[in-house]
Image (cartoon, rainbow, N blue to C red; front, side):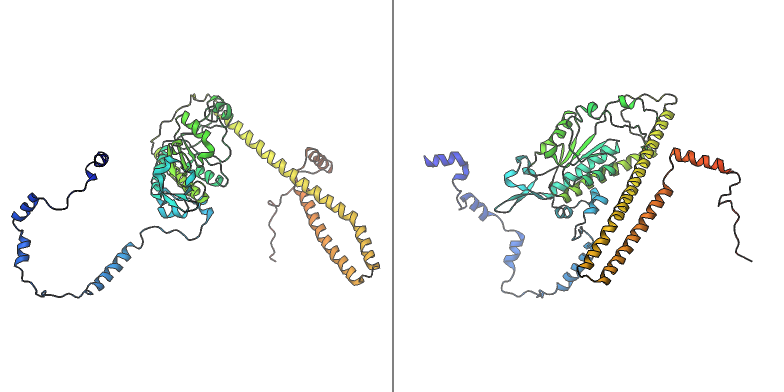
Length: 462
C-alpha cells in the first residue's frame, strides 16, 4: 500500500533505477570496434619520457605583457562616479538618458526598498533579494530599473517630438526643484503642491479661467485668438509623470478615466498596476528621485529639439485645432494692445510698491531720529548719576564722546538716505504743477537753456 502511494505521487522517480548496466548494453560495448585514438594509445610504448619537458614558468612574461596590453585598451571603459555628493548638480545639470548606469543608480540608493512586511506582491519580478535579519528590507534589481527608465525616456521623447504636453507631478518635500527643472527642459507643466481633485475630469470648471495662448510650429505666440480662448476647453496633458504615486492616487485614477498614459516611480510598497509605465526604484531618496526626474526631463528636451529641427525643415506635426477659428480683421492688433496695457499696468504696480517701500523706510528713519532726540537728556542724567556713585570722570567723558561719534555717523547715514529719497522720488501731480508755475513766474525760457551735452568742450591748453 505504501509503495503504491509512492508510485502514484512521484511516478517513476519514486524507485531509483539500477546502477548496473544491462546485458544488451554490455554486449554492444564489447562487440564495438576500438577507435583510431584508442588504437594509437594501445600501440604507444609505455613508461617512456616525453620528448620535450616544458618549464611551467615559460608563459609568465607573455601573460604579463598581454595583461598590460588589455589594461591599456580597456582602462577607459565603464563609469566613474565621484566620491562626494553635490545636490545642486542633479538639478542644474541633470544626467542624460545615455548617462544612466548601474553605478549611478546604486550611488543614488535607487536599489533600496521598503520593509519586507510592507511589500506588494505585484513587485516580485522587480525584487533582487532581501537584506537584513532583524528588520529585513527588499533590494530592487537595478538591471530592471535601468531598463524601465530607458523605456520611459523613449516614451517621453516620442511624446514631446510630436508636440505633446507632459505634466510632471511631485508633491513631496524637496521634489519641487527637480519637478520645475524637468518641466522647463521638456517644455511641459509642473505641479509640486496638492493635486486638486477633478482637474482632469472637471477641468473646465477648475482650470477654465487659466491663461492660454496659441503658438505656431516654432513655439512663437500667435495673437488674434483672445476672444476665443476663454471659451475653449481646458487643456489636458498627453502624458503625466508622477514621482510619488501613493499620495496621488486620485490623479492616476483620473488619468485612467481619460486614457492618459502615466509614468511614475514604483517602490516595493506601491501597486505597479496604477501606472502605465512603472519605474521600480526608491521613491524616498531625494537623490534617486532627482536622477530619474532629470533623465526624464532631458529626454523631453531631446524630443523638443527634434520637433523644432523638423519644423525648420518644413515638417510640421498635425495637432488638434481645439475648435478655433481664424482671427478676424484687427483682432491681432487688439490683442497686442491689451497685452501692452497689462504689461504697463504691472510695471506701474511694481513702481508704486517700490515707492511705498521707500517711503516706509524714510518714515522709520525719522521715527528713530525722534526717539533718539527724546532719549538724549535721559542718557545725560544717567551719566551724572554714574559720576555721583563714584565713577570715573574720564571714563564717562570717553563713553560720551564715543557714543556721540556713533550717533553722528548714524545721523549722516540717515541724512544721506533722506536726501537721496527726496532727490530720486518721482514728483506728484500737485508738486509738478507748482514747479511749472514757479518756472513761469521766474521767466524761464526752455529755448535758452543749454544742456551739458550741448555745451562747448573746455580745453586746458594754453
